[in-house]
Image (tube, rainbow, N blue to C red):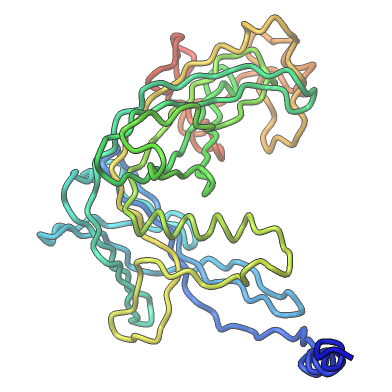
Length: 356
């Protein structure tokens, strides 16, 4: 009998004796504040959200809870203050006329809660964003329900420096004769670094899918944010956790520390990030009537009745179940959720906010 054969059973027993029962019990974490906010050099307003983290126990009893009543202010290094005002529970915005950020300056956040607790962010410098070279759309009729236009952009990356990007969009299309519907998109997946393309062109970066449910014009405003290294690492960490396949070899989800802290309590962990970023913008005007095909009807729920114009647009009524008649003008039109009576800068047609 060889030495290997002689000792193999002993090795097997040793391995088996090391297997412990797997416990499925989870520890219920305490509530933690989460802050998501931005400050930029683009035209205000800038937004911020403040809420408590969801508790995930075996009973899955956690929900996101927005928290009201805080004093929220952004400061530059000279002490100049930009206040954020609460517009909904736990949702804050600067004034439309607030002073935009300046490239090269540093900014930080200060929050005071009703109970006197304080939340600060570490100062971050606003980095200039290179201009977007081009934004373009390609029609994809490959599927029936999801057919539409894939939007891409190209950007020339500056050489010999580390750059981190995030892309956000706001889309405008007619809701009625006087109103536009707004589609905002701020996906955590729309981020990129120049690690493998330094000094070259970031090409065909996917930005958005625009549905082919109408032949109307669609204006897309594309914003390119120049992130700090810390902001990119934070968003990339969230992206990797979301994209985890759920196998036993995936790293367990964990709290991602951002640039927020409690100056009075080192043990108080504040989650989230206050993003300070320079931004560049490029608009795309998409004429959805040039495909030579008939648009797929919109499938979904519309909170307000679709207004089909006066005189009545029967095609609109047939597709959207809309009504005919006079749609109210400002302030009623502007107060509809997700609507505005102000046309985007690049809107190619004459627009009268009150139908004058």
